[in-house]
Length: 248
Ligand SMILES: N[C@@H](CC(=O)c1ccccc1NC=O)C(=O)O
Image (tube, rainbow, N blue to C red):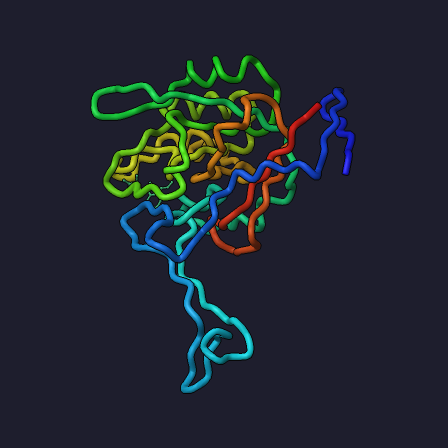
């Protein structure tokens, strides 16, 4: 299906039959990625006496209960409610699902024990583009990210000034292939989250952060149509399925 998009005075074409899924599959397996010190997700058939929710075990239907954590087990989109005392739900604040996005690749910079993504790196990657969403692929990038165990590994993160820069240039939706935009163990400071959402001044309730995406190597840096979809959980975060489409 061919579509024409008119965005901020420019016309683009895209082929909706050629999606680039940048979500990670969520599996009930030790292979599944995990962060924040949890175990693997669970997907298990309901059992009630002799009744079973498994066709392979004699039941009429497959009927699984799923136990997982959106922040820990895979691609998820969160809103400011992730770090506020007040309850804000991603399903209530995210009401549009198509955006123009810039995909950039960044090699985090070693600073002491940390690997940081700096404002300068984002400025260089964005090349002055005027878009609503940014997709950050960190390097090195490989399929091992689909299985990575992040707990206690001090993954790379965004410097506060880098997050502030994204807010200043009008980025509403930030997508990244890390478990957090902040340092794993920062005693709750959450400087990048707070800067991006402008928590202290003019809270940006319509801005979202999507973490634990995976952008395969073959996808080139550049401008894409982004379909940012979530499941309709009334919660600070929901598992999601961001999809990119090439713009021509
Ligand atoms: N860095 C925080 C913890 C944190 O950021 C966090 C903890 C649990 C689930 C998600 C988290 N952050 C995700 O973006 C801290 O050290 O308190």
